[in-house]
Amino acid sequence: MARASSTLLVAAASLRALAKDPAVWASGASAAPHVPTRVALCLAGQARTFNASGVHENIYETMVAPLRGAGVAVDVFLALDRESRKGFDYKARPLAPAVRRLLQPASVVWHTIDQASPPADLCASYCGAYGLGCKGVSQTAHQTACLGSIKRREKREGRPYDWVLLARPDAILARALAFDSLATAAATAASFPKGVVFARPGRCQTATYCRSDTWVLASRPAADAYVLAHAEEFRRTTSCAAARREIVDALAPEGAKVHVHKEEAYATVCVECKLYHTVRRAGVAVCGAIADDAIVRQNRLAADGGVEGVDPLARRPPVFFEAPGADGRCGANESELLAMAQTMRPAVRASNR
Image (cartoon, rainbow, N blue to C red):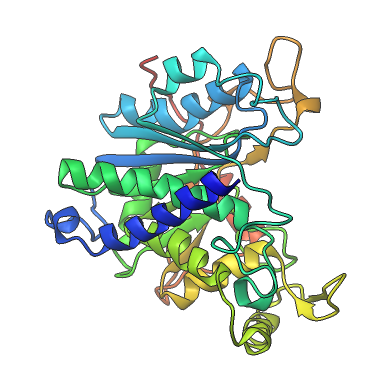
């Protein structure tokens, strides 16, 4: 634990330095391009069912192959946790050779983080994000490590990625990320100088404010705000009560579910709402996306490693990204997004496996 904690602390400090390095952004590509050519896929979190063929093959077929087939460079970065509850035992069983062969990761980083009692350099357990504790810190910590690998690659190559795709290693999509979908997202991003984050509506019982953190497409450098700003908030040690009041007061009028903390008896909100409050404070736009993403537990795996109950991709339309309305803003609710997404035709997939 001490080694993992120290590694992540060094990674966070290095990220702050890289973010200020002009060599990384010298190409001028920090503004969202109209023709995206480089995508970094970050798979971060507990590995769980990642080794199952139906999971990592779906990730390749939906997030990697369609873009590579259209000439987009897609590099895969892994930041995984060996403590994989509800999944395979990665302490005794390494990453499957098929995963490396198929995804060809540019970087693989392993950490072990106990979310129930994380080290103080990751989260001040008596305060945490907005004074609401440490729930969600494990995913943010792994995304921080993943983003560190991405930034080092950018520095080495002297140019940034156009997009960062943040996903879980145990989640699959029922829609493919086609090039046309990415081009549509890029056109939307051009309307938002500080970047945009696309994700589906979350489980916070609010129509528009909250967005799920299972699968996210972030323009570059909006990904920095998504990951790093939230990582910094987890280290809060002062003004905890004021921070709690600020986030609850900001979210309650938006329809977010405000509930009472089970142990501490203060008003609180869900993990996704905390994350997207951070993004909005950074001036990053939040737009909807429909990718039909789902977390795969072991009880959904067939004997051959496939995932039960998944329709063939050829029958499904591609990933749908929301475009800003007449007022220049995003804000469609879940039912509106689903209605718009249903009008899309099934995608023709390109694969270079």
